Image 1 (cartoon, rainbow, N blue to C red):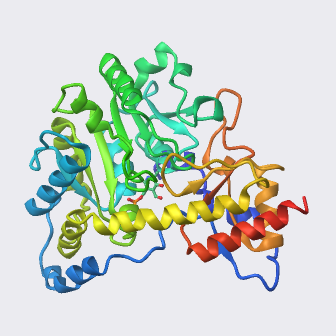
Image 2 (cartoon, rainbow, N blue to C red; image 1 turned 120 degrees about the vertical axis):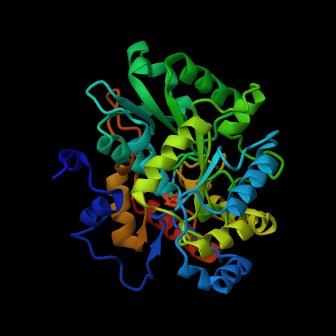
Length: 396
Ligand SMILES: Cc1ncc(COP(=O)(O)O)c(C=O)c1O
């Protein structure tokens, strides 16, 4: 067996199952799950129609590079979304089967394994970054995101030697679970570091389209490069997805874009890995990337839900509106573990203890005494969950 497999932690949902194994949820209260970040708004009907209209394409093998029309639609979307002067659909874009597989596979392609190899990521973080680093034969290095650092990675904690050993840095903006967004200037500071120390930046931007102010969408890494006058996006690759933007988590459709040299190597890796996107999914994806109306309507649903849920919590729970994304990351009045257990046993509401999403680094676990709540269910269910949580808070 691959010895690196033994280094993988159980996934947070496996830890959650274990945590609740001795509990029976309250009777008479229907379960409400806030622990999983699976979008539950309706998928756009026109995308589903396009997919079903093209089922006959199952008769053909798709290529790893994807249809030129898909890459063109993605390039046009990127240019519109981030006001980029140019993106070359042939060399600077690759379709992927959702960002999860791509974030994992990317490390396998770009990391040179060895004792000194470091892969850095925010802490707390999307768990794939750690598994990707370990299986690529590198050591993960976690950079804490705390209230003091605005819930963004505290890069000032990284030493000169650690930067020298860094081969790959994952960014996540808007962040999961903190919802914090990096500014254009913060992104540019990191781009400058990546060039000074020669590491690759993998910027996970899969929540980029879930934001609250229509006039200020979160900036992206390619935008930061272009703003510095670099249209080659040297060392920079972004990861985008239709899962959250278009409520299509089952489509497994996303893309990576950026540095053409890196993408050439990644395409070669993917050719062997064998993870081309089915053609009818590519055609459905083109329809989705070409439309913004459903994305705007989706944002409005989240805006309404956040307002309704935060109104319930006001004065009861220490929780802030995130910059973007669909998570709340409140402080817990008792330990995150105890809080999650009480909510499950007493209210049949499932939340994820923050420590399951983070590792101890610099002497602290920045997920401790916080929980992640995903506001993905209907407004009605999210509000009911909030009311039950407030009820439980009154009993602690
Ligand atoms: C931060 C982050 N990145 C990536 C993903 C993967 O999304 P997908 O593979 O559906 O694009 C998720 C899913 O929850 C996520 O939270």
